[in-house]
Length: 522
Image (tube, rainbow, N blue to C red; front, side, top):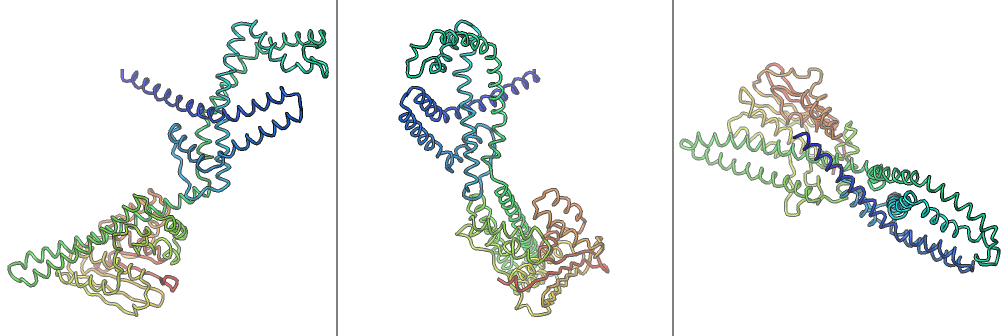
């Protein structure tokens, strides 16, 4: 019973598909009716009017009308209507071009329009004219002879009449010859009629079969449009990856600090009221920052879902991502990643009612160490070099790195304590963090594991290759590794730098190198 039901369902689906294809061809026939009417009128006028000058005038008028009827085929709105028709009845998903249609797009749309009209006209002629004529000639040979006699008589009337004489005064011998030709033609048509009908039917079936393929080619985006759409899709995925990292880093850190501060407040509640109040105040401040950043991320997601991302921002991001595809130097930072770290510039204006994330400074990095010390986790921050010349994007990235290091130390360190050293050079910043104690893990610098994995993950994300991302994450998986470390490796690769992590002398060490240049200055 189930097999029979499946068979019935399959037959029903096939019948519905066949009906939709037939309906598309019928609509094409309706489109073709005005063109066929003009052609029939012009041919009739040429055959019926004896005054050649008048006949030429009528042909010229017919040509003008025909050209006017062809104008809608080149309009963008007609191409959009044909695309909607194909999506609804042919069950296609045709991407909308990301820009205004060019003349090449209009020509491709007109080609589909005329092809659609021709296929519909062929169906109408076959159903309305050819099929009844074939059935009539097969069923009644006498009717076939009379039908052929009438058709050939009309076509041969000028030949049967003398010049300047009406057809009725034709030479009887000429008429006899015409009759013999008519009889032979009727018999020939009677034999070939079923073959012609089968050929027309096969042509219509082929048109219905190939119509979706032509719709994708002629109504869909061009090769340049597809490349632009692919770039926009990569930008969208890159955006979401950046937002996911922001949520992981900021909210994860906030929750960790809040949990630690809550534990401190609970212990000091009845012993040290001042310490408990300070812990509660820190919880409130951290929560406010987390809520603000989360609200910003959600605003960007809402703007993207509502289509509020401007075309200029999308085009700019696409160009930037084209640079980021190389992932081979600090130039990539000026593209996709520089927009990502600036947050609010990532998706245009986003929600006009939402504020962008705070612009990080070196004071924010110092505050991270103070937060850790406040909850009983000894943290020492050492900054060497002049930080005044650092580009904001680099400072923002430094804040991310230190925040991830502090969060991981709070969560996983076997012995409380963290040393953070930031060395600022003329064209490079190096960050080294050391946990006081560490469990088992990979050896620091083994085969430059962190750099290779970070770059592989960045390449996979920029290309939008989900399998590549999964493979990079899988290869990087270890007991001491987290998404935050992978994100650090990705962003360091975008800067043209490197990131490595692992065990050295019983300590968990994170080393990050971030090159920068004056070109990254805003």
